Image (cartoon, rainbow over all chains, first blue to last red; front, top):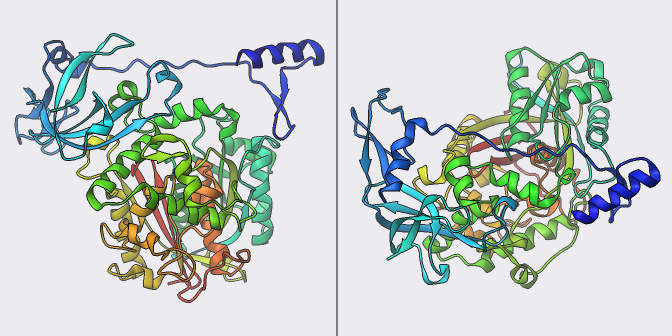
Length: 166
Length: 393
């Protein structure tokens, strides 16, 4: 990208425009100079107990007080019985690995990480959880027992949960 | 009002790296032949729908841009987005507009210019099509990753292998090589596919559809207008389903619930026997964004029983001459997958196949006069299934 910037600057000076020639087709491209960086502010006010739970090493879900339906990821409203009275319950943090993948080609915003394994497990409480799998993915198989551990993320330092083979 | 709606004209750009044209120029490559083959002019168009997912490309207001570039102003328009099912969703808007009596002739354009952004940015943006906070923000899933989770589950449950999935890529490249509009017009063998680098285990490069620029356009018309046209196919039925955003909110990963739901509706409306629907169809285009997705589609569409979809490709039953030819235009895998254009491209293929206008070596035998298009957005977030026919019903 640094190289592209230099070519664009050179072409602005020499030809008068921020242009490059596409290597494969030789077609002339205008290089957009209006770069946009995106960052969202996502409201977690109504699921705060989930994050407070992680601080204490707990995995929290919501449960409808009316019909008993369990929600993970936690949600504030129960659409089954139209009642928004939910309570916070702690999950048991053990279950069965259902599937996994190893991300070799990562998004640029995850480029600081080596290839990582994403897994989905079904917890004994009945809900499923998606997270990174700790350890060598070659030594695990769908169907085996796993647990959920709260840990600090290596690069960003914030708390998150991960799936760990038992 | 017109209960029956026909496709009376089609247009399709070359798919691939289209650095040689701008967005409106690329769209015009499909619009012009669509208008010409339908024998209509801009003044005859009552309404137009543009399927475009965007984000990776500069222009956001493509309906207005095309009103300006293609002389479609001041007719009504709408941009439609349903992730990778955007194209077929755009067709649905046009179909229902005609059925309701609001319009008689509707132009549907599907367009995507993904190569306006560098590949890493596109990978990042598509990864965000899942459940943003619970899948992307913290766990960095990518699109190959979401479908790889399905592939792993399928392999574990039914004993399929990476080699089985490679056979899907081999088939789709075989037919892509015969499609002059495909991004990849080159045959490959199983060994080449298996040797390619891992993208999201168990998927390798050759399990994945590419990042593509392309456009496709169809003209839909009411029965009143269509009866004057010789070359046409009919929209027999559509079924649409929606799944959860977050994969962990689903019961299984070897099937897409939204696809099963959409298929059942589409088959029922078309009067097709759900036990052996392939007996009523001459072929299908299914959403093979990844090889395993095609195998899962065989089962969701009931071309095979659960767990037996993989046997169809092992036995080459989805080549021409088999149980049902699938993706004989190269599919998303070899033809390319310009997100918003894909569903419209599938309609163009249905038109070409049913009217026996496909290129040599990739024309199916047309006996039943029916073709199915299966277009999935996200990882089963949206499924649009359309059945096309030579006859009205």
